[in-house]
Image (tube, rainbow, N blue to C red; front, side):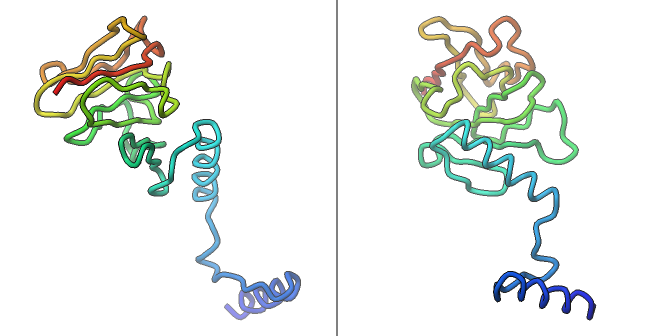
Length: 164
């Protein structure tokens, strides 16, 4: 432990008196990778605000994007209750976007147009339809909640409509 204290003092001297965080305060490789992933995502999809280490809010919370699935989760529809979700990859592959608002919405508002590959509807009633402009592509609903692969319509949706 004395070695670590001496190491921090030498490092502080080299850095001109900058205070060095305790060893536990340095980011681990996993944290650094997550930060890089967040930075890269926001650079490619501007306008979002990080609201956690793994989540970005767009439109004051209208759309929430989760970058990575929870540990141990794979190919599972996992949209939280009260939301409908769409995934960037078939079989519910992340990133995941989630909305709950009613009405027609342009996915380009959040740079999510032409990216929907699978979907999960987790609202007790109703449905949401995914569109390419005015053409309905597919629907998920309270009766048919999951679509693991949008098939030939994958990556074509640029609008959603949830009647309320």
